[in-house]
Image 1: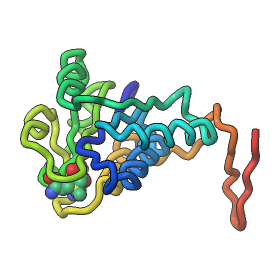
Image 2: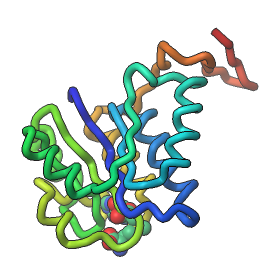
Image 3: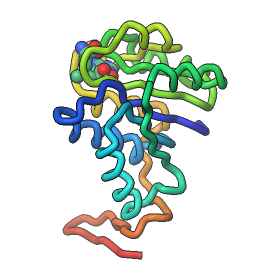
Length: 175
Ligand code: SAM
């Protein structure tokens, strides 16, 4: 997929700081090409610093979105498709062929609190990772794993820190 942007809507600055950061980290680590956030500039600033250390400035974009509805309307007008992750949707595994048929520009919407009906309607697909309430971090991780055929195991070439996976202890090199 050429462009797979995760759009986090409804971020509540005090309450969601940590979980929104995790949504962004999972997006980057599991193969999305970008993360867009409604509000939450402070979160984006700390993520910018993380990209400087761990890499991704070249291959993973971060942006703040004033109006997620405008963002999605423009995304669709330019030929992009929208997948909304929701416990009320249709199970991801049964929708995989349709997800793959959506083409190579997908925005994946994840919510925080209650999500307005508008998003269910603009979405090309409303996809569930099981029909029980759980977490946007878990739902996104499983969705990206399915769509990208596994977790991105490699490193980001532009990072200053590299981890060498090891049986015991921590092996880290600074480049
Ligand atoms: N009842 C809320 C709603 O309106 O969907 C659930 C909010 S939940 C804490 C936050 C986000 O996690 C949801 O907007 C959705 O993106 C994601 N999520 C939670 N459970 C999910 C599931 N079973 N499948 C897919 N996404 C899920």
